[in-house]
Structures are given as C-alpha cells and as structure tokens.
Length: 272
Image 1 (cartoon, rainbow, N blue to C red):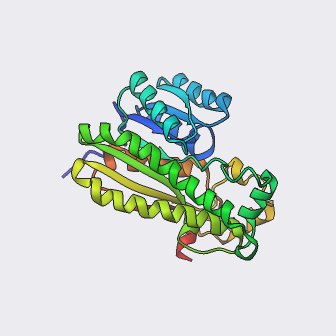
Image 2 (tube, helix red, strand yellow):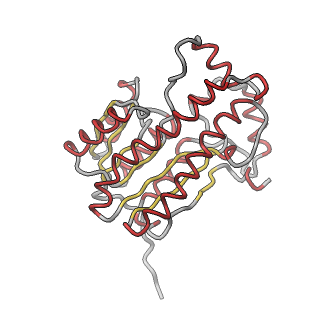
C-alpha cells in the first residue's frame, strides 16, 4: 500500500505567539506563517523587532501583525486577544513563549533583583524569587484563560508551552533553580489542562529545550557553549529553528492525536 506523506499544515489557523519578537518566538512565528497560519506576533518592548518578524512573514506571502502586551497583566492580555480576534479572527493556536517581565519589588534595585535570581539558593531573596515564579505562571495563565472561550466554542485548539529541560533535571546555579521552579509549575498546569480540555478538542503540549542559542544566552562564555556541544550526542548547540520545528509539528494537523506530551529538543542531552 502506498501512503501519501502528510505535510505539516496550519492553513486557516490563527495563531498568537507570545514573546514573538525574538529567538524561539520569532522563529516559531515565521514557521507558522510559512505553513499557512495567520500570526499575531506579541511583543513587550521591542516593536521594531516584532515588526521585522511580521515583514518576513509577509514577504513570504503570509499574513501577520505585531501586538503589544505585558502577558503578566490580565487587562493587557484581554485587550490583546480582543485585538487579534478583530484583526485576524478567533485564536485557535497559542504558543506560550514570553518570559515573565520584571515585576519585583521596586524597593530593591534592578541589578540586585537580577543578582538574586542568578544567586545560589543560600543567598537568594524570597521576594524576588516569588515574583519571578509568579510572573512566569501569569505569563502562561492569562493568555490561556483569554483564548479558551473561542477554542471551546470552535471545539478545537492547540496550546504549546516553551519550557527548558533543566526544569526536569537539576543543574548547579541559582538561575537553573529559579527558572526550573517557574517552568516546572507551568508544566504541571499544562498537564492538568490537557486532561481537562481534551474533551473540547483542545490539545495542550510542552516543548523542552536544551542549550538553544538565542540572545538571552548570548553573554554566556563561549567555552561553556562549546563544552555543552561537545558532550551532546548530536555534537552541537540548538538553534531557535530547532525549537520552532517541534512547535510547528505539535500545532499542526500531523499531531492531531498528541496531547499532554513533553517533547525534548536538546540534541540528546536528556538521556545522558
């Protein structure tokens, strides 16, 4: 029997990618556009970068627009989703990529907040860690709550959370702890949603990345990146496009029977 290979398709999909102006979010928005989706590119501060992503999609024949919102603020998220609905239509694909914005106590200087997030547990500051974790949960919770009514009405939808493998495997260093705790919390929320929302035709999945070369880790010492690449089974670091391809698969018709899944994109490091 000769079977026709199905190509990932997002034709007629309306997608919102939070944190879509750079890195993994930008690569995902571009791939979505290439596969036929109409894409809302969310950004927090960098409108220029978001508009560049929109222009790339449009030059390839797709449809997109940039929309600003702090995804940790419920009112801004609701306004953003309403604008996307008015401009493109009801959202049926949501990618939760935006990190939490800095919303820690204004009584603590910004550089001290960052140092606390980066610090080992023994010298960390509870208020800052609490704000960081809360912000990441809000960045996933509010957009999901806002798009759910339309997804339930349509009896279909795909929600994909961008996580990191160190949320499931401890590493040394305060940044690993802070990010791991925050993302592990969202991962648990995603699993519960997959169970609850499945009967409504809504799929919920997570993509966990390893060392993915983005501007967020551009300042990391090159020797550390090289060391990670040398000990990775595939012998390289990841690219935003690697993550985007995994997200596109989970969002597409090819993954129509996949929900509650955790897809690892780390070159094989998780098995070591």
